[in-house]
Length: 272
View 1 (cartoon, rainbow, N blue to C red):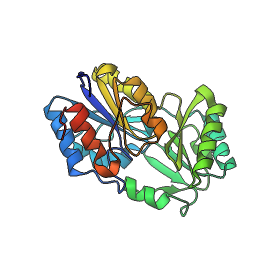
View 2: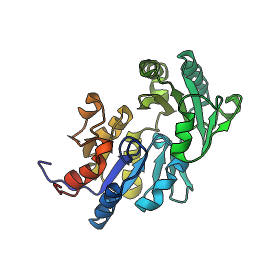
View 3: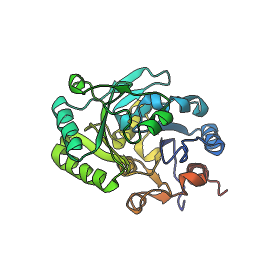
View 4: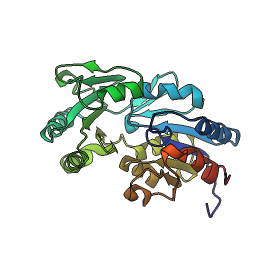
């Protein structure tokens, strides 16, 4: 980093950033967080995952900051006590589910800490259950949940289709909801104020840390919003060129200790 700056808090995305491709939090990543804590730098995480799906990280990272699930739609404490939550308006939820199905994507719905699906054998269900360490609930439809939905996900291995659905959702919902890809195969639709940029604002208000003293790190288009709100931003080596172009700095891939290297080099000042 050419210019030394004060960093008081690091906010990290989880999948594709903090953990590697096998969803493993490496020892080097844990050690980097410990070293930051010793240096007086706080650490927080945010993800499209439900908070329960990040709970396996709470103890290894010794988190003492609010955990932002659903891209900022649900904030919880370390004991999973809900601090604040933002739901998708019922009319937007209905339209979003229809739009996702019109694009021939599968649909998942998250309500509170529940993950709801209609097709148990659909793409990525098994992998997601392994990742978040809990099983989804199978329902026939989502109609009775429309006032309590924190996040709607469209899923397909046709990445171009997911991208087209993202563009159509952004046009359809405008300022009424946030629609962005958290992975090439996942489209997340959340409350308009549930996005990673709003996570930066929440942590600024509740922890008293100025935005310019917050560093953010991520790999997907939905991480760009937190890049814009923070004083320093880092894109992972596995990010697209578009995402890299929006960050202050770029580190290595998540499969090459990119998170730990970024903390050592850009945050702690070590060139190891």
